[in-house]
Amino acid sequence: GESVGLHLPTLSVQEGDNSIINCAYSNSASDYFIWYKQESGKGPQFIIDIRSNMDKRQGQRVTVLLNKTVKHLSLQIAATQPGDSAVYFCAENAGTYKYIFGTGTRLKVLA
Amino acid sequence: GAVVSQHPSRVICKSGTSVKIECRSLDFQATTMFWYRQFPKQSLMLMATSNEGSKATYEQGVEKDKFLINHASLTLSTLTVTSAHPEDSSFYICSARRAGREQYFGPGTRLTVT
Image 1: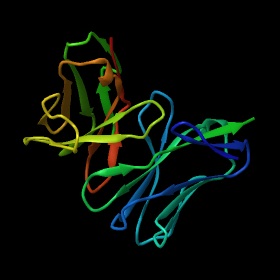
Image 2 (image 1 turned 60 degrees about the vertical axis):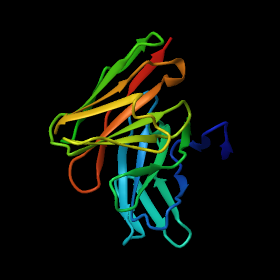
Image 3 (image 1 turned 180 degrees about the horizontal axis):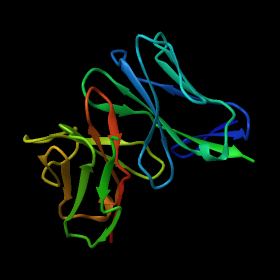
Image 4 (image 1 turned 180 degrees about the vertical axis):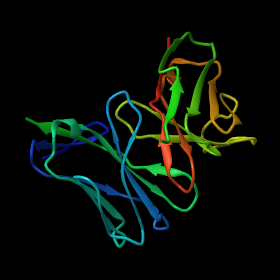
């Protein structure tokens, strides 16, 4: 289930189950969205992106859904594996080159 | 392709000294590089946008005289933390824009000020 820690919410998922990580973005003018995975002590790693003219995009084991009406983004990971344990950030971009990062969610995969 | 490196990966310095962090795009030219700061269990906060051949653009609340940014070539940007203090201890991450809006991130530099 989900719990809110001091700074980062945590999602605990059983290995093999699907994970859904949510993100609310702030700027209604944002038209490009990216999901990043960050392991401890490392830089963000690109997972998948989506532009505002789409509402769904699929990659390998990952799917991003975009709901512009409620300014909500989600990342679905199929068949979650121990290697998926990390912190996941969404980022939004509104036509400039600057990214605004969300608060992040820690994903814990339980064996 | 699109590899970004940072050096050093970790640095410990004494309070009052300055430390320089390098960000390099290894296999592409980056007209724009970005510097972020990340405190433990927090998100990435954009500090400044570094444009090759021109002055960096700093985000609100970031002291430009404390965090000096130089982007002298299309593959190198440097961040110098001047007169560092313990509260400057953080994880500093750079990214580079190759084309369009995609950014490629470096592995980060852990700065500890004692």
